[in-house]
Image (cartoon, rainbow, N blue to C red):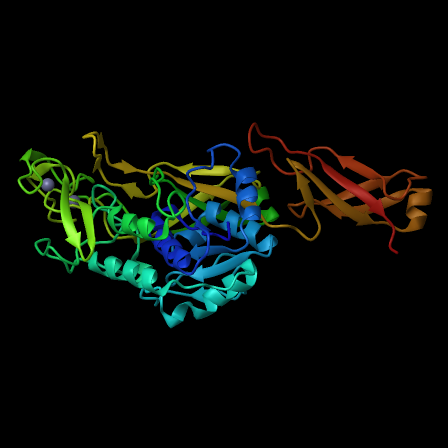
Length: 435
Ligand SMILES: [Zn+2]
Ligand SMILES: [Zn+2]
């Protein structure tokens, strides 16, 4: 594999489009997570990133606060394979702001856009493979893609997905009556692409299960962890449409007349004969009785910025996870091809605590470790030494005579608060002499 694209799951359609274009340049591209088992994520992730020569990470308003994407970006960066891409205006996460990031927020999605030059150049450098653009195939793919209602790169999103996971965001300009330049069923344009490039299982493939949960990271200092703190967070999320509670299309009637209830129609696109999802019934095979007017049947609101204040308890440390039920994103109700209705869901918000490193203290669980400088004469003859704990409280240490340099003294109950069950860990003070 030459290239592995990492992204926030809501932006899978964008990742797939980019993968299609890069395959048109002759690269072997993967972007699906479906073969990664839910457990042991990290190990598989590392293996996958190690197997790729270049790892473009798509930064968008949501991925910049996704622990999952940030973790992949970090692994890719450590491996020297990271190619950061900006999909839309977003504040890059800590540690990534200073990197050379390819701004594709204005990219019109065309495979032959000059905006891609620097990006392709870096991919060529990392993969050691010169781009070999198949102009005719790329153009054919592009024509088909435009026929299906081409979008600017930054607009590819699941955030406004219609039932059946339409890959293109409905721009609102479409009145729903026109037969051309209209968002269509998920697979069509990509099926054409797969046939042209023989990409099969790599580009394309089954959709991964989407979840409405949102994961984010809150960084705190050791002092904040000691006392507990309220942190202000900002997340971008969609909510279920309040008018229809995410139903989008409210109730269905008799079989759709346009597709005789099959949900599919056959259409001709240039030289291609395509099976398309019936646009009259959006693939359900039933006549739509009542489409929600507020959300045009989409079932969710447009993404909104939500400000939250979250209470991080005393004793929280790296790995502590806080769940705010119902504060995540939303997935609208969907009607699957086999007629099963997936009900609308509101997800949870997960906040992963990340402890910033401290210049003086280190922690292991609730125990705290530090060094204290003592005069050689104090170690030899014994004496007193002032130290302080994480809270800043001063402690007078009685040093017995004849203590070896490098030995630690344990101060019981002067460490960090225990997250569960009260009490405090211990403080270990290692005695060193100034060199
Ligand atoms: Zn609605
Ligand atoms: Zn139909």
